[in-house]
Each structure stands twice: as C-alpha cells, then as structure tokens.
Image (cartoon, rainbow, N blue to C red; front, side, top):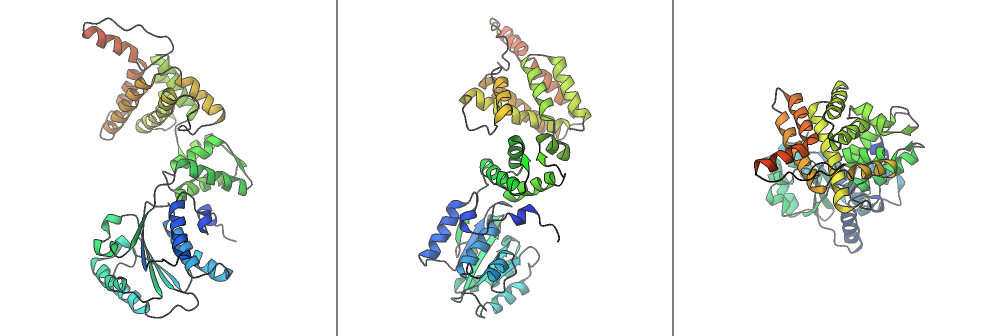
Length: 379
C-alpha cells in the first residue's frame, strides 16, 4: 500500500482529539448540543493549525455520522456527497459560485445537512463573493457553510458579518511537542527530548509543518531520532559547536570564538543562520538568568538543560539582552551586504570583547573602569 504521511494519519478525527484549539472545539460541540448552530462559520488562522480538520469534525458531528463508519471516513477524507469541500484557490470564478448556489437547493442524500467547506475562501473573486452573498443571507434550512482562510482581512465584510468567526491561534511549541512524542511512540521509535523540542519549534505553531518535518527525520530509517540527525538532514548549525562559541564568548576568548564560527561556516552554515542560532541560544540563557533554573519558559530537559544552566551562570540578563539586540540588528544588515562574513565575525568579536568595550566606554566618559568579574560576560 502507498505510504500515508504522518500529517494525514495523525490528523484529529474528533473534538476530543483536537490539539491547541480546545476552546473552539468546546464551543462548537456545545453549539450542537444546545441546538444553536449558525448557518455559516468563518475559521481564520495560519496554515496547519487545524482549520480544515475542525471543519470536517464539525461536519461529521452535525451530520450524526459517528454511528456510520463509512460516512464518517468519507467526511474526514473529504469525499462525502453531503459535505462538499471546495478549494477556492482553484475555483475562483463566478461560475463555480453559481453552480454551488444552484446545487444547494437540493437536500442532502444521507445526512442531516448539506455542508459546504470552502478552503482559502479569500481567493474567491469579487463576483463570486457577490454571488455567494445572497445564499448566505437566506440559506435553505438544510445548508451550512464553513469558510476557512489564512487571510481573513481579504474576506469582504459583507461575508464576515454573516458568519460566526473563530480565530485559530498558533499551537504552542509544548503542545506540539507532546503530540509529536505520542506519534514517535506510536511509530515504535524513540527520540531525544531535544529532537522533539527542535522539531516542534521549527513547526512555528503549525502542527502540520511539525509532523511533515518529523516525517523527514523518520525517513532516514533510524530507530532512535537525534538532534544530530535533524541537523544533518536540514543543514542546521551544530548545537555543540554553537555551545563552544558561546563558551568562548563568555571567556572573552576571541580566537576561540572565531575558530568556532569558522567551523560552522566550513560546514555550509551561512553567517545569517549562525547569528540566528546564537540569538535563540542567548534567549534561553537570558530566561535562565532572569527566572532561575526551575523556569518552564525554556523547554529543555536532561543534560541539555544542565549544560545551558551552567552557561547561563557566566552571563547576566542585561548583558544577554544587549547581545540578542546586537545579533538581531546585524542579522538584518547581512541580507543586503556583500561582506556578510566579515560583519558576522566582527559581531562575534564584539561580543567576546564586551568587557573591554565597556571599560573603554567608561574611560571615554571620564569614569573609572568597572571591576571585572571572572567568568561573567555581557556586562
């Protein structure tokens, strides 16, 4: 049989399985139970956060398909005769809208309602929206509309005013990580906790993107998934080398800082990506320095967490704020620079020599150089 990707196999099929959008799931479930279902809904949110899955689950429960496995599977796969899914991106013309309107007058074949799920509805032409508007104003009793969009601002106000709107938020990294852990276990594999965290973080709030990335890692054929495997597959900066660069910065070791950066660059990691990786690591250190070792704001565990706690002890929060701001500013400068490596290396040297720069600034103001504290950087 053909392989089915994780994003499809582990898609939510009931309100109770929904991850990250529980409040919306509870509201829709309660609306059905209380017989307060509107005739049109607008689901808004970025890609991969569960809009279409929620629409299918909603349609399945509305049509009371849980007791009929064949119908339930047809709805969840987008192939049911009474739950019609339309991709607005490829059906933008007014003729498609008019055909939809004409067909809506016919009653459902086996369900309670005829439900139209229109994905990326913002892609419809103005003429299509106008044609759809009249039906949405006074739809037949047996018709429900569920509109999904990633760009709600492009949906005309006349359409939005006739819908109950639900905004799907990006899914928290921790929630994505919990789901990925269950997927890995279901697939009979094991994974480093840091690997799960990195994949969840790279998903940028999208469960589908995170599952697709996990699929790529699993395709390598390893029974134990590691951060090193992820880095090699995606060309990400080596976490251990980044750690050595940070250690060199903390020690004021300019040569060690540049040597670590050179090793990253020789592995094909661009200057921009190097600074981005440093910025993310400085963020974790800043949180540890500001909130203490027990904080839940840094999603690391085991040896990786202990290593970062030790590194955080060599910095202060204020200095790390400065380092993050500097890396971010230079990263933006690199985009249009012909000397990106030189700029990145100068930034790293500046970070490693932070105490020297602080002393020079103090002398320039006519003050007394601050007393250095061994083992701390970024002051």
